[in-house]
Image 1 (cartoon, rainbow, N blue to C red):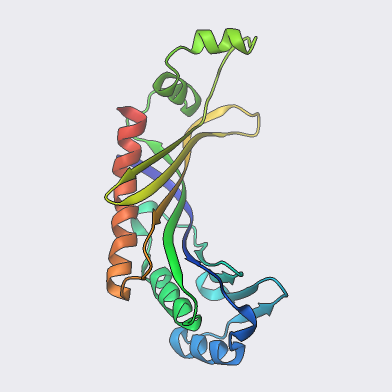
Image 2 (cartoon, rainbow, N blue to C red; image 1 turned 90 degrees about the vertical axis):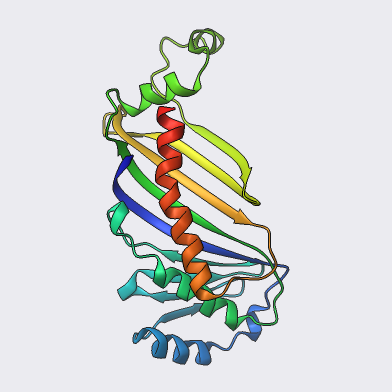
Length: 220
């Protein structure tokens, strides 16, 4: 199983047919966020977007004419990540644009990890795993050596769309380390957001299965 050194960020995207930012009641949002999280948010309004920041919880939400992106930028160990506040904020923000039609929602996870059983650096591991004929590619590129590669995989499973990107982490000398960078997007093409407990369960499920998927993809 991958041993994550850091989970860099997680977010939920809510996609709408359109969002009328000018109709959002900022005073009401300020009061409700303060009451819900016991913290006063920082609210910034611009012509094209609106941002709400709860700095003490590393939570933020950005509203634009098509979507709301709720981000948790806490840096944590993979196993200790608390995903509940993220789901709570998503449900709250969705309620603030009640007249907008939801067309999809999704999760994004970004982390740096290493494999417990990895015996080579991440660059070599990805080359050997994904490039079936590196010699031919090296020749086509007139390269002296292919020392690393990154990969992006799109797939459908369980009626949801996945976009998985994996690449090596590089050190200050631009050499691959033993760590990998993984970014996963999970897209649900539905028109209704689940209730809070079900949304929390879904994001936790995808987050936990991410480890299993990465292990299978990297090691086979």
